[in-house]
Image (tube, rainbow, N blue to C red):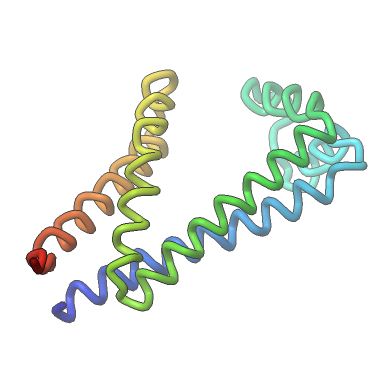
Amino acid sequence: MNGKSRLVLRAIAFFRFAKAAVLIIAGAGILHLIHRDVGHTAEHLVERFHLNPGNHYLLLVLSRVSKLTPQQLREIGLAAFFYAGLFIIEGTGLWMLRRWGEWVTVVITGSLLPFEVISIWHHATISKCGIFLINAGIVAYLAYLIRCNAEPWKV
């Protein structure tokens, strides 16, 4: 494996670790809200960050968030931890420059691409399209590395 490939794999691993960190923080924050008034907490955040409380999209978010039950919050928080764990596994394999890390990343990320396409189909945004292109590029690059560096099967 050349130096450029190692650098790219480590950059992808760093990206995976960063996503895991964000999900862990988000999951902990969501679980912290289980026995609180989520609507009031969301309104407090709007005030704290000086967001426009009359914004149509913000009102939609506040309406949805205030209807979350403790069970739904628990499920969302645990899902965040689950995905963080997957990203940590992917990142560890890639950081260690292991073939299994490439395979795990291709399988997990590749299996989630159809859901990203569906999400874009229903409501396309620049950020959704950008994330899809990044993930598709990662899958394509890793699949290329796996194919180019594959050793022939020994009989």
